[in-house]
Length: 173
Length: 173
Image (cartoon, rainbow over all chains, first blue to last red):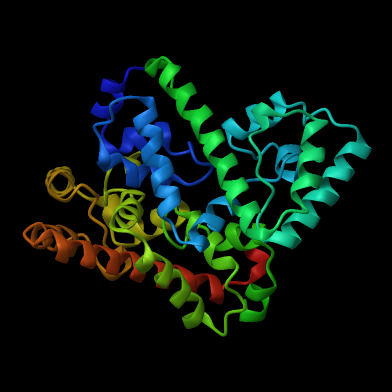
């Protein structure tokens, strides 16, 4: 899909296509829509990220809280968004052994208790052994730093999803 | 459901229950969750509204753009959220005649073209004759005033939805 197609989209189309570039936050795509035309993928991305950066901390934490746990109950129940399902499956998180799942559940719970939002990681850059290692490492980081790290992961995920969408055939979306 | 129950909810529960208090913007409930405990319904409401008020204009417009048209294609297709379906049906918008529907479609299109977001109105305070009248009236308002009016309607809708939820039996949610 070329950028002209993106720029020609009406509000409904744009939010349908880009509404989950940031997990379960169609508000961001809806806000960014009026800032078209975009010159290219990078420009589109820049507007998504600028919106996230401009939010108050409560809003940024709200974005993180719209993310599911990695290898959590939603993956087991199959209630993840299509993008999250692909990303977590691609990282091997659907085929964990019982011990691995239990370990991740414990780490996820500790992380939520400590920071007040779920652990967010661009699963497409990770795998079943790196996820728990990274989770355990980031559990020890100071809160302000961890918020920045987590938002960085939201942007990595967004960047990959936007790139996928711009590579996709619009007829198949 | 009493306020203690609300205050005891974990993140997932809170967003499941209150995620659509602002149409298709779970980000707001996710952001507000960490500001508990809430003293009562009014206090809970105050936090939702404070988040909306603190957003930049692009974010406020983004919230409006997450709302469906009144008597629009989503109502016909049955793809509205449950809350919107009840609200629009309750205002008689499912049983419009062809002329009424056409008139509203034209007004909705003019409104979107003029303001860049859909016409938002608390349908539960309105009906099939008042909706087009209010839409035609607000079409003539200055943009800044109309943004304030529209956000006021978002808050009215939110207030009704929050009140419904706090009256509801938690077992039935």
